[in-house]
Length: 242
Image (cartoon, rainbow, N blue to C red; front, top):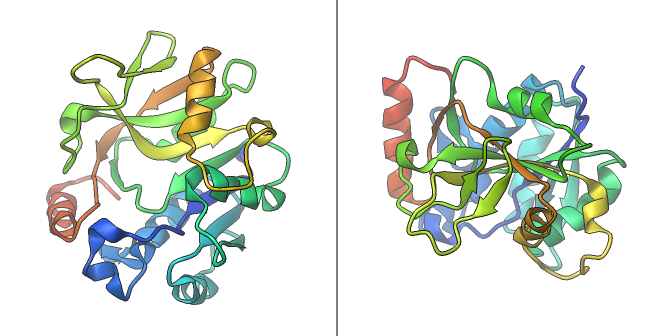
């Protein structure tokens, strides 16, 4: 049984870069390689043995709720309703804390999408989690091999797995792949208003307690309508599983 029992899926965003697809469809329900991005995320949660998932909703929330009603796994799925105000990543997770229990939990961006390596990456992340040494553990992908990503990278990683920001470097070898394990106590002094999880990442860096695990496989950036076709072509060309 997984040591992590809860997962939070960030599905409340507006998906503006995915327009016009998201003019009438929330981004988590965009289909890639035969199923929605949200289903890819929830299937991986279930495969990792995580029995309880929380999904936040805001934009076109009724569609997401109706879709969730038709799923049969993970065993328990709850909705954190943000219809009144979009709270960004950190604020959204903070609002959902009462549904997440009191232990460390996984957070996934609903559009986090990758080709697996020999072992499932979410399972690897859970196995790597060490609460004594870490406040946060991020799944990070190599900048050079990620499909559809054109940025300069986010993090550098030392031999012990500790992460630091790119800072003044021109490029960094790793990007955040949109999956993390966090401790609920990190939110104790955070605002009830909107804020980014990056605030907590930076605090963990200052304490030397932000760690990373390199994704085994290939991360696919699905941020625009054009990226959907590129990701599907890569999936079709791969002998691995999604």
